[in-house]
Length: 112
Image 1 (cartoon, one colour):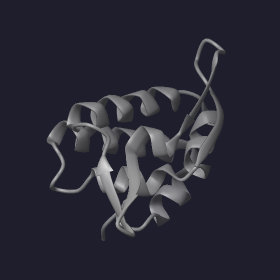
Image 2: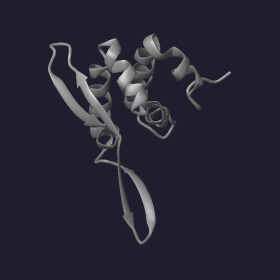
Image 3: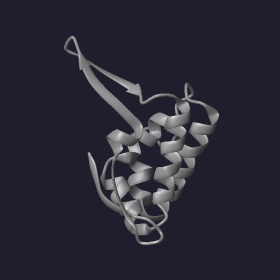
Image 4: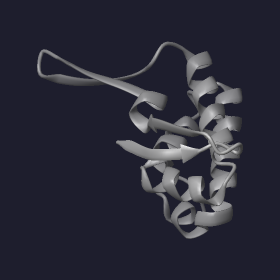
């Protein structure tokens, strides 16, 4: 899914996809596999990059509308590295400043 031109703080634009940033899916023998792109380092780097793009309120809305929330929730899983979990939590926290209802209603995001 395409995120339409996110704006950097300096006004430059970047077209990114949630698919490119978080997961790579491929089909083999009619089975869909979902795997991390390369390693936890790539996932961590991409999560930090997306969080950095969320510097503006406009970008926060675009990121949420593009479907990032379920990906952030997946990155919070106990199987993930602590640094990845921390960065995912930071991203959700940042997005919640503008999209708090969407974050609060995302399955698996808040407990209790």
